[in-house]
Length: 183
Image 1 (cartoon, rainbow, N blue to C red):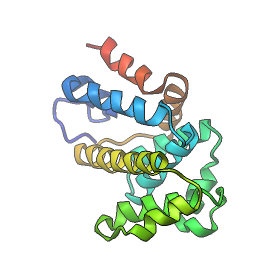
Image 2 (cartoon, rainbow, N blue to C red; image 1 turned 30 degrees about the vertical axis):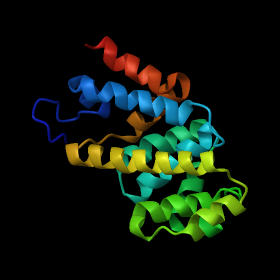
Image 3 (cartoon, rainbow, N blue to C red; image 1 turned 180 degrees about the vertical axis):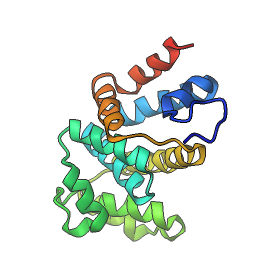
Image 4 (tube, helix red, strand yellow; image 1 turned 90 degrees about the vertical axis):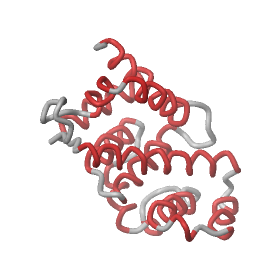
């Protein structure tokens, strides 16, 4: 139930975006560049990081939407369940594990990041841009999780699937167009 009295009790994030277009527009532009723009990380890997961080934060809304979106790009839901249990044994490419361990540690204990954490990412074959993009996705979803949870935004699995379809087909630019049309 939304904590904003001006929104419907069953408000989705798009309702927040429509109510606050001055901050939402640039935020969605950033989502589009970061999650759909050029990167050493595939769209699937970036959506996986979004879902993983959201799962670590127990943000049901973002975890649900981005797990479903990652699935649209070929990442099985069981993969996210396994990642949340143990990155080391999860069925993901070995090259991803240090990157996921990095964003996991950054989410849980950001002040404890060390050179060794970054070195493990580089040793797995990732470059600086990949580390930057992974950290940026991690930071964005720590922010989004707090925005969603702080405003009391929830949704059902049906909504997750519909939202994933929109994000897979139109990206975040398509989402921005949805809220622009309603203004």
